[in-house]
Length: 324
Image 1 (cartoon, rainbow, N blue to C red):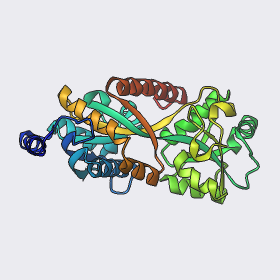
Image 2: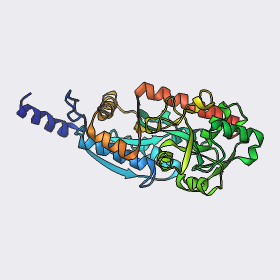
Image 3: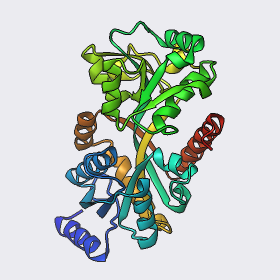
Image 4: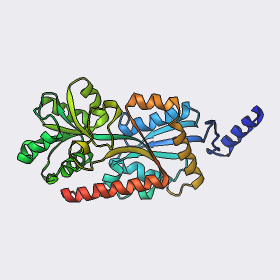
């Protein structure tokens, strides 16, 4: 393709809108993305949107990215906004809480009211104990819990019925115990929950694997298991929860992106194409490794199926625990 023709095509794409046709060599796929972030600066959603936008723009897969933080209603304010504006250039970041908070009616909408684009990164759950704990493995935790559930306080950085609570309940249920008896201690955030573990306020902690890895490397905590199908390359000596005796346990706190309702098939395909190509760039590797993220990618119908399956898994567990 001649240089003149390339310039003409690029100029035409910018004049005609934000969508341009993907090139085999990784040229621009989308002109502009307005990232809508349902929480404040510095949180997981914020970091995911800005990191993704950084990789997409630096690699040339999109022309430009802007970011808007819109807190409120547990994420409901941003969901209502993207539905109301129906802006095809806006992508909203979200994660597992959109499923949990929809089930608990924190907001009336669900992922079905949006256009699911793709799940892009994940953080698996982990069960963690302090370095001086008498509990050496998951079997030891289960044994202590079975003997006296009231003596085994497990903390987390989310409210009762939130994600960390559901992770420990799922692990204990699949280990053959009565998960309704879990003595869950909620903390304001993951950092405070970790502090509670290190100070001895709680015997174990349910948290994100990525949040626990560095402390485990420093010898401050022991990770009993991770809720993934396979061992994580970051710490290959940590067993999966399934291996450790919690049969069939798998849970990932995914993060991904949603478009406005009524998004055209062409625009949806362009977003998916840009995100999929992003994984092959050095710019993405830099962002991912800096943040300790795990690559996952499920788009379009596969993403919808994943969301439906997670909704059923979480819904069934919440009913069993009395939260629904």
